[in-house]
Image 1 (cartoon, rainbow, N blue to C red):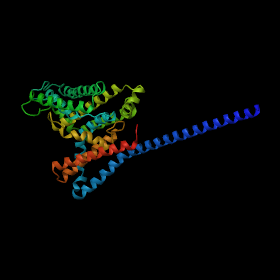
Image 2: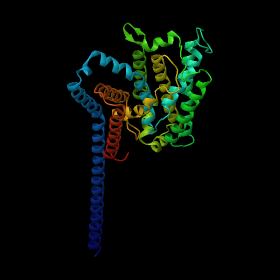
Image 3: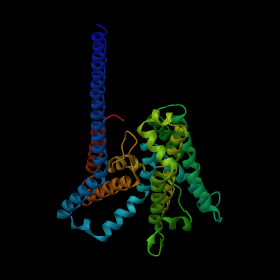
Image 4: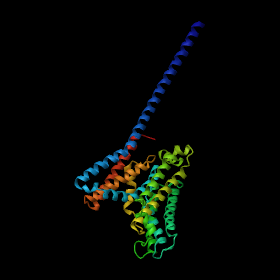
Length: 369
C-alpha cells in the first residue's frame, strides 16, 4: 500500500510539473508573439518615417515637372535662386518650431517674436533718431535686441507650458496676440509710419551681401541648421527632447529633467524666430511689426509636411528642410501659373491639412508608445 501511494504521489507531482510547464510555455509563446507584433509595428513606423522625406522629394519632382509643362520658367536658374533666397528665413523659423514639436508642443508666437524683434532692433539701429544712430555698436546692439526678445518670449512660453502645465497652444496664442500688439504700439513711439527705416548698411549687408559669391544669409541659415542637427543627433539634450516627446511619464521616471527640457525647446524656438527676423529684416531693409505675418501657417505646415510629428517624439532638421523646400516651391509654382492670392492660400492650406491627416494616420499605424 505504501508503494502504491508513493507511486501515486510521484505521478501526481509529475502531472503538476507538466501542467506548470505547459502554462509557462503558453504564456511565453503569447508574450513572444506580442513582442514580435509590437516589434513589427515599430519597424513599420520607422519605415514610414525613414521614407517620408523621399516621398516629399518625389512629390516635389512630380509637381515641378507638371508645372514646367505650362511654365518652363520654373526650371530656370533665376527661379531656383529666388526659391532659395525666399526660404531662408522660413528655414530658420521652422528649425526652431521642430524642437517644440518634438516635445509634443506647438509655438504659435514665432511671427510675433519676429515682428517685435524687428521693430525693437530697428529703433536702436536706425539713422533717423535711433538710440545708437551712427554708433559703431548700433548693429551689435540691434542683434542683441533681436535675440533678447526671442529669449524672453521663449522663457515665458516654456515656463507656462512646463511649470504651470498650461497647454502650449493657448500659451503661445496669447503670447502671439500680446507681443504682436506690443510691437505695433512700440512702433508708434518711434516712427510716424508703420515701419522704421533707414537701417545701417552693415546690417542690410546680412540680407544682400556675399562672401566669395555665397549670400551671407545662406551661410547663416546653413550654420544654424548644422548646429541644430548636431544638438538633436549628438547631444544629451537631443536625446532628452525625443524622450519627452515619445513618453513624458517614462522620461520623468528615467530621470530626465522634463521641465527644463521643455523650457529649452521653447527658448530655442524663439531664438530661431529671432534669427529668422534678422535675415528677414535685413532683406526688407526696414523694421516692421507685421514682419513675416504671411509665414504664420507656413512655419508649422512646413514642419508637418516634412515629416515632423504633431504628436511629438519624431522630427529632424532634414525633415524641416524638406518641408520648407516643398512649401516654397509650391508657392512659387502657383504664382508662376498666375493663380490669385486666394487660390494660392487655399492650395497651401489644403496641402498642410493633408499632411496633418497623414500624420494622424501614421500615429495610429505606429501603435501605442
